[in-house]
Each structure stands twice: as C-alpha cells, then as structure tokens.
Figure 1: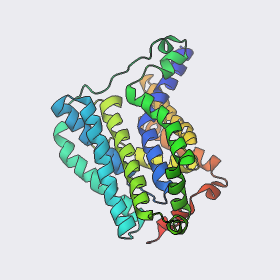
Figure 2 (figure 1 turned 90 degrees about the vertical axis):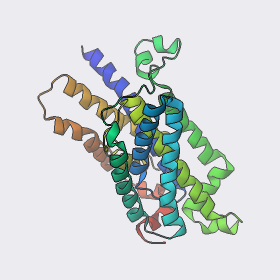
Figure 3 (figure 1 turned 180 degrees about the horizontal axis):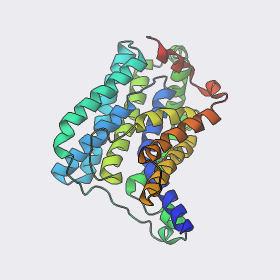
Figure 4 (figure 1 turned 30 degrees about the horizontal axis):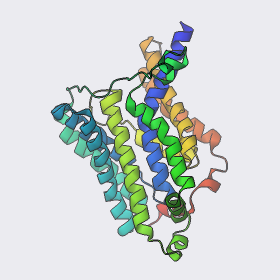
Length: 304
C-alpha cells in the first residue's frame, strides 16, 4: 500500500510538472535577455484555451498543440512591444497582459467548459516502460511530457554553447556590450520573449489537451507565477529548472493522492500545499541568488 502510494505520487509528479516546466524554460530564455514577463500565466491561458477549442472543433491534436503554442507566442509579442519598443514598466505590462488573457479566455472558452477532447494519451516507451518502479514513473507518459524533459538540455545547450545564446546572455547583462559589437539588441529581446511565449503556450496546451482533457476558466491556477518563481529558484539555469518543476509537480500529485484517500484535512489546505511548498523552497534556497540574476533584470521595476 505504501509503495503503491509512493509510486503514484512520483508518477504524478513527473506528469504534473510538464506544463510548468515548459513555461519555466520559456521564462528562463526571456529573462536571460533582460525581460521579465509576469504575463506568462496569460500565455499559458490562451494556449490552453485556444488549443482546446481547436482540438474540439477539428479533432486534430497536432493542430491544436501548434495553435495553442503560437497563440502563446503572439500574446507575448504584446508584452514585448510595450516593454521593449515603448519602454513600458515590465511588471505593469505583464500583469495587464495576464488580466487581459484571463478575461479573454473566460469569454471565448465559456461554450467549451463542459466539453471533452481526445487530446494526447500516454505512449509507453518500449522496453523501458516495463522496468520495475522506474518504468511507470518515467516512461508511461504522453509525447509532450517526454519532449519537456528532453528540452531542458536543449535549452541549456542553446544558451551556453551557441553564439545566439551568448548574445542573449550578453543582452541580458548589459545591452551596451552587444550593441557595441554590432548586434541589434531589440530583435534579440523580441526573439527571446517570443520563444518564452511559445513555450508558455505549449505548457498551457499540454494542460488542457494532455493533463486534464478539458477546459475550465482560469485552469492554469497560478502556474505562470510558479514558473517565474522557479526561474529564480533555478538561478536562471534550465537544468536546475527541472528540479524545481518536479518539486512543484510532486506537491500537486501528493495533494491529489491525499484527497483521493479521503485524508481528513480541508481540501482548501491541500490545494494550497504546492504553492506553500514553492514559497518554502524559495526561502531556503534564496541566499546569494541575486548574484546570479542577469543585470538587465534590475531595470524591470522601472520604466526604461
């Protein structure tokens, strides 16, 4: 019984972490370029809603994922324009984008609340899925889950082992340096924010098309803000972001299992557990994090 409970929690942790991991990786890229996007929650919402609607109307899961991903990227360009081109306050712009997307998805998604979609189902990896213990935990998930975990080393490689990644990091530290070297700063920042929005939209699409197979208003439930917090926890590093996402996913899986067992604890307290755990982890790991922050992010709390 105890072993089955642990296996269920660990399996759920891997599955629950996927949507927030996509968003976290996207935000790592954007913040490495010196742009804070608190509207990542909005990108996830439009990705979840738009992807779900396309999935219901066309029964084409691939098209639904692509549309959800692109919608997240398009929405992020609003934030990029306001902050990069118009010099708006990044915090205010991100929050405004979030509330805009929250209202928009509530409006257009209302007719689809009671509907279901085929979406993505688990695809066991041959042989590996039969391994004792590790098989069910790691190798019996949907294709986007596998893609999310493989994306961590890819993002790391791009940021730290490619010319473009070097330019992104240079822009995030001090835009004057790449500008003096002949690089245009704004296109780099636009690209980073757009990629961040794409991954946020993809995380939202996974949430509605693979995790829940349904749509409800505000279904991201703060995952975008958790993604921003995990970027800080990971010190803007894509590999460490994986650990943070798994901690958050594990907390979600744990509270779901406890509710399923009928543990005599208020469900509201259990629902709070993942977010409380995230705060605790940030408090315990926050020492000296400021030394890892891209210097350009210090401008995010003032108009530039």
